[in-house]
Length: 248
Image 1: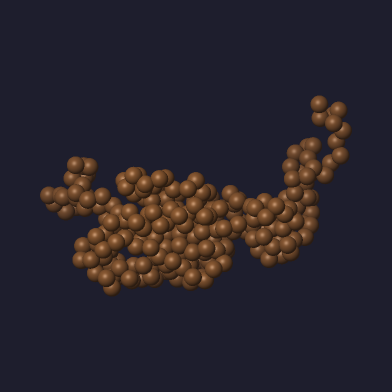
Image 2: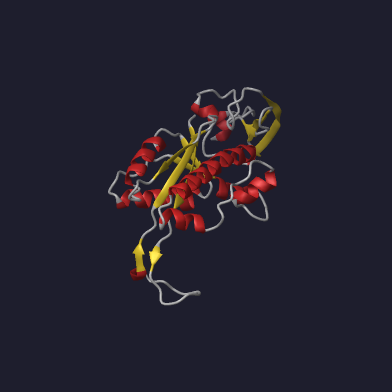
């Protein structure tokens, strides 16, 4: 199972206004659309994290072509707000450049999964790092870093942003692996390896029977628990011997 963790950083949109303060900005006021500055990614279980960047003219086309080749190798791609932010920006820029659509890979969004399963004060990546006591996000010093990269074309600032992006990808993997036993995942390691005698979450064979459960008046299934990640899952086989004539 090839699991890809990814994150992207984008430039602001540029628009003209008459004054400061809260106001409505019409699409006709937009001078420059949002572009992708960099995309960080790593494969689950590997130490190295890659980061692609826009070119010296701040064109993101070549970067998107490279990342599309990476994405099509994945069985599942995981991003924090990946469905609502990252993949939508990637698709928008691919379409802008008339490039082929991204590969139809399953996107697992850790933000949505956290909101679905846990009642927390916040579901931001920074707070999840603090709550679960894993590696922390890097400080960027605020919006100034984006302005240095985008308007001033500062190479040092771009390098700092790429390190920030790579660090987010690393801690995303840590967070996701902490959440994974509690999540209803869209993918199964056991299925991908054509072996039902292993944990569908982490792929470990250190599993044991953990009781049975009635899922309906006519269906009883075996429950298993993984020693490694503590994930509980069930066998699809019905343990009740019900005559076929009765089922008709």
